[in-house]
Length: 629
Image (cartoon, rainbow, N blue to C red; front, side, top):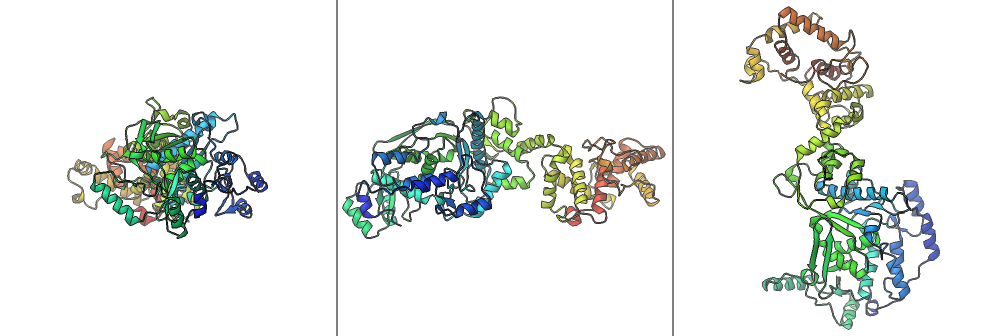
């Protein structure tokens, strides 16, 4: 698609399209300075506005460019620069406007989540620091979906869901059609990119290139054969305007290339990497801004978006460092201030290679499914490249906002340590009560099919509560409560002595004696009804103390006088006296006989959980949970 007709290209100025001041004022009257997320009713209302197109209200960035794209009068130049909110300002002194700009081509992974977090922390801290004044500090979510072949709505929704799970809520984003600097999907900003490219052409800072792919391939092969780093040779850089006009009249496809100024050098003071510089002319040559299809390239979109959205600081992965050269050239050509840059080192696997799927879970959704808490993930991700200068490693969300500082991001790569993440998660779990995490444990149990989603609500609540209390002390993840419950509900005692593993603790204990006698005593008492069993009317007795507080310590016995736990304890004393055994010579055989394990949690709690799983109308999926009655 041709960007402009030949007459427009040949003229350094063109007539401006007058802006409808009344319409603009009406639109601005609908806007709020700190917008809330839109609702269906609001979206329906806005959709009736004649300026509402492509799912978003045409905003000031698009409206203003209408009249200035091809003009160079002093008034219009001033109008053009209004596109750039930070023009003439020191970005270091402004309330932070941070952005996270994912490409919707897959799930949100650890590296992207850390990038989002660092930007979010700076934005939230800035909002606190500038709370006393009216400001536009914000965490902006921008969707970079110009890769049409790979970008999908499903991926976008997945990334948004992961950010919501992490609690990284945005102040401006694609779900806010009325936000001041929207729209926030690059696919909805094409008019803005085209008009700014037009402006660069008219100012002699960009030009059409009619080279075919075949010609570019020949050019590249020749340079490689000569040992020269391949880059565009400037064939159309200073072409005769008449030839250009003829090509356009013929409808020959063309790209728009940026004209790199001769001898230009780009220098940035990176907050993480220090001073970084490039010889622009020797490094990149004249690069493409718009493809022949009219689709803008990544670096052009990013530069335009960062400048027109007033982004003050860009925190991103070091793999984007080389993109900064092209983006800085574009920003300088537009007369727009550059944001501050901070390029964080990569996250590595334990083998010191770039973290990838081969290292195990790397997507945020998988960590959620594996039972990690969002606050623990936030805590651990923050530590992957940053510290507060102390030995502290456990932070609440508010503590991170207060402590985080870009200047303390380290330059060296970080290694993702799953054991460390589990430890951090365990510390956060310890700070929560059983009641606070029961709902999350229920999600895990439903996900693992341990319980039926449509079961009785009371029985579901009791079973999940008991499972959580039973596992609370040893939990590293929420999933541990579910897997521990499955262990408790199973029964792994072999059918015969010969089936016991040679040298095992169980086999050695049986050899020492006591097991068969004690096991037969338990069977005898059970059959004559004298061995205590959980009370079907009070199956939570073992998990509650006399004050009706939940018990998480394994050494504490629950129940009141006459309850099942108290009766069980009295029975053990009676067996010990009758059979003249005590200590481990009693409790190990009893535990092995009743649970099939040599060690584990309090037996009364385990048998109570089994009773819940086997009662009439149980909500436990016996097959998936591996229940052995």
